[in-house]
Length: 77
Image (cartoon, rainbow, N blue to C red; front, side, top):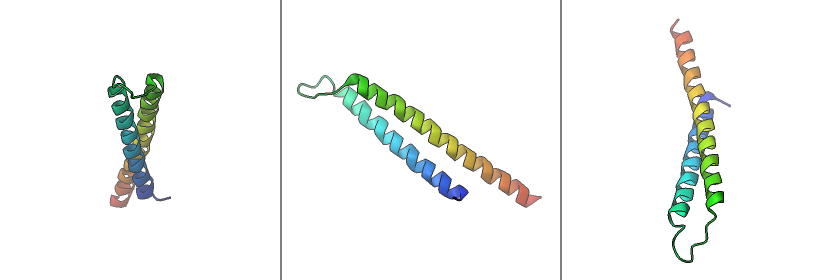
């Protein structure tokens, strides 16, 4: 896998986790709506899981960026 492919995959992962967080936030916000059945504990688990997933993907992206910087430094020398 190339560095750019890993970075692209991590961006897609961050977008997925952002959407997951958005869905959980909407479910929590609508929890008091009559007839809307939501499990607050399950939604909070989704929030925490999305947070961890986003952080993991961000770390992969940052590592890829660091690798690009290193390669550019080597190429300049």
